[in-house]
Each structure stands twice: as C-alpha cells, then as structure tokens.
Length: 173
Image 1: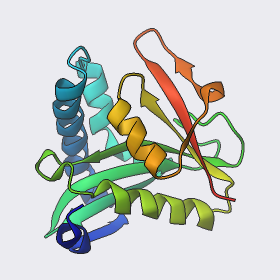
Image 2 (image 1 turned 30 degrees about the vertical axis):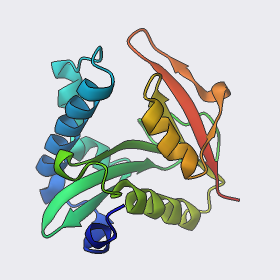
Image 3 (image 1 turned 135 degrees about the horizontal axis):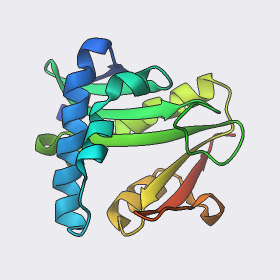
C-alpha cells in the first residue's frame, strides 16, 4: 500500500458533477483489469452504458469516491436494504457494488479506504452486515475481500446465463 497516496486521498460522497468521471472510471477499470485477469470477459455496449449511468444509481444508493489532487481515482456503491438494484439476499444488509480504482493507481491500496468508509456507513445505518458478489474466476478480487473479513457464502450466489457471481458477507455485529 502506498501510504502517502492513501493519506493524500479524500473519501467523500459523490456529487452530480462527478457522474461522468465515475462512469468513465468504471468502464476503463473494468475493461482494463478484466482484460488482464479474465480475457474471456467481454463488456457489451449495454453493460458499458449501465456502468456510465451513475445518476440513476446515485438516486437509490450511496456512491463514494476517492479524490486525489482533485481527480476521482476510485469509487464504490453501497445500496441500503431493499434498494432497487441491490443484490443482497439477506435482510438488514447493505449491498456493496461497483468498486473500482483508476487504472493509473491500481494496486496502490486505494480500495481499502473506500471499503472502510462503506463499513462506517453501514454501521451508521444500523445494519447487520454488508454483502457483495464477485465474478467467478476473479480470485484476486475475492482474496482482497477475504483479507478484509468477508466470508464466502454460497447461499447468496447468483447464476445468470452471462455470469456466475459468488457471494460474500462481512458481518458487522
């Protein structure tokens, strides 16, 4: 972890004027990182459009950004229980989605303060846990969450025709 870089990063709630930068960061990060680690994964134009539609997600969840020297270099979404778009399978749990860091700072530890802030937020909401899903085969991503205390929970897996998503949970109580 680059402690200097992390120390200089501000974690804050996203604002409407951040939507374009967040959308492009998501598309770029997902395409670039999956191309390296899972070359068989192809992002359709429909999926890219979904990633860029930050304004719609901001209406139903809390979007956080990591800002470094005035530039958005990371983002994550936390959906409250029952929110449209949440994939949580348990009551009283937040659903974490769309964690990404800019390709230029990938691997520098900026995901950690974003994740820490989601945990603060979920506790403030009085929730029992945070859930999330990881694409099967993205073992490095899964290990990052497991190091943070997330536990693999097959009962929450989602099997879609285009992707198998493995479920994880972070108990907060």
